[in-house]
Image (cartoon, rainbow, N blue to C red):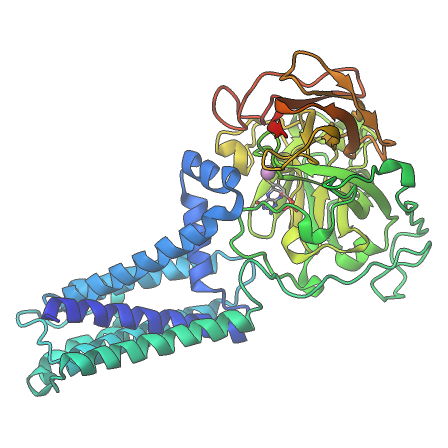
Length: 561
Ligand SMILES: Nc1nc2c(c(=O)[nH]1)N[C@H]1C(S)=C(S)[C@@H](COP(=O)(O)O)O[C@H]1N2
Ligand SMILES: [Mo]
């Protein structure tokens, strides 16, 4: 292994150690954000629209491992190069480390919940140790650095100077550096890297897992009439509590066919889309929801208890993502519990009759700065727009927005369904929320759609009766009719509909197809409660002329034996 390579690996090993320390501290003290996660968030935030759109919306969360892997590789390469650079010019290397420190601080300090001093100290300490490890490794292999470099003088990067001490002092020591053979170098470097990785692992474990597990199972909600959760008897400002709950799902609202999705999507199967690398961990004791902006005559700062003491409402609402492909799975039906958004706004002194240009848009903002906006009047038009704290009779799971999110029937998630809600602001229509800035359409009404669930192209089918069924949705308009074609759209057959649970909810259908052997093209189309049939126009969610959701008929090619 030559000198260049050794210095490169020394730098990379130092980086692993530095990250290990930072992750470990994050694990034991959450208010020091994970440098890695914060950096990834920063990358996502700064990514230009087109790319972020593809990466996050179109691919869902599949981009996250790619992002994490490329960041890890990038970090190692940069650190390796910095160490290699130190051989020539410790000063430039020092500046490089200073820049890394600055970026790490910028990323972490912009997180919603952060202990500033502890975070700065952690980053400085981690970098110091990392650089020291790198320098010791280089020392150990007898790398003489910076023959001609002047010691770094009193530059602005002096803050991270301790980190570079090892590198700079090496000039003095290098003559007596213990030159180790290749094997020992690999052992030492590998040992340092392994220790760093172990620290990362322990840190991640302590922090409660990555983006997948998302911590413990949410607590069940107590919804018995009049009983408010929160445990407090400290007489809230709001008087009467009228908890309105829904009866169990009626039998006739479901059709029992193999492959039919459950009418209410279990939490574990509920689709998941957001820009957060890991869901914010919010302690309800220091969380609040502020309601402010134009036309808000009585700005509010609501605690979790305040919200739990208001009248609650349950509602079955199908939530869908604008980036769902025709036939795709980014749609689910939830039984949501919350308080009416209109109640919250009225409490904040918003007069529905006085909404004007300057209060035309309602913007939800999450603790991590994500935004979504829709017409304020939608909150007052009678639909069950909720400030939701429950899903399927439990508290919201962390990855679905704990403690509180918005749910607005009839609007795609990207314009309405702010998770980890921290602020509701009334403003004008000029403000562009997160995905609008990234080229998606400003208004996002959910398009009427239908999906074939009980038959797939891979099934081995045999002639006879085959139930072709699935779900159709047109939230807040309802579904009045579903038709199935078995000949690629030449002729259409009326499907049998389950009872409509709610016009905001998807509806199950089935068509009992008398299948003959041969190849067939199955299609489905739905008509909404206003008599409008979904368009056959084939469009992707984004691109190909559209930026407002996919259209066309779900088509499944089958061959029957
Ligand atoms: N804070 C926050 N809220 C968010 C998002 C986000 O990225 N951040 N994504 C939105 C989008 S695009 C959709 S489709 C829904 C998805 O909600 P779910 O993950 O609970 O299914 O959440 C919305 N709320
Ligand atoms: Mo979405």
